[in-house]
Image 1 (tube, rainbow, N blue to C red):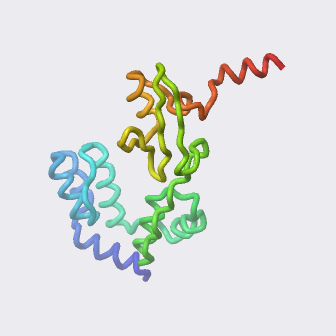
Image 2 (image 1 turned 45 degrees about the horizontal axis):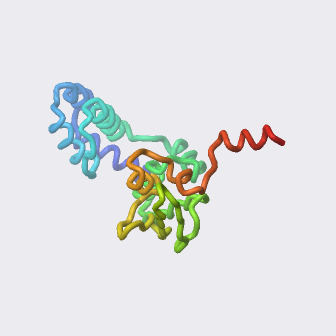
Image 3 (image 1 turned 90 degrees about the vertical axis):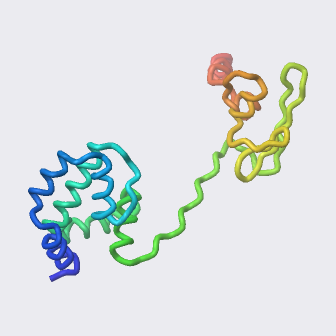
Amino acid sequence: MTKQQVRAQADARALGDAPAQLAALETMTVGQLAKLWVELRDEPCRTRNKDYLRKRLAWTIQERAEGGLSVGALARIAQLGDGLPERWRMRQRAESGVPAPLPAAEPRDPRIPPPGTVLRRLHEGISHEVTVLAEGFAYAGETYKTLSAIAKHITGTPWNGFLFFGLKKRASDGAQQEASR
């Protein structure tokens, strides 16, 4: 008997009558569902969506009563590897006891110049300078997450930050250049 099957049998005994528990989910409030979520899943409940909680809790109750995914299904999941959703990979690592790797840094947008670059833009006779940082942009002594936020601050209207600072040309400009060739 595998470790998972032993756990499933213990869970089934602890849960009692699975059909009765599934039926009870229909009459529970969101607060009761959230409390049951913490009890069954050993993780905090991050949603207040009643339908979602019912579906996920029903799955958990059935999984514990009937033993979860088959050995073949788990083998296929392991075979798929990086093609799996992150949530499944996290669950596999937790069940196998392997510590989770540190999250990979998001790739930097290739349109953004390297940190330290100063972008200049003349708008309504005033020169504006923005310094590219490793995480965001510095303008007028403040840090901004996006160039669009700075462009909106300068102009008072929504702007695409890449267009405003000349890092991207309008699509119509490119089409006109192609047509003139």
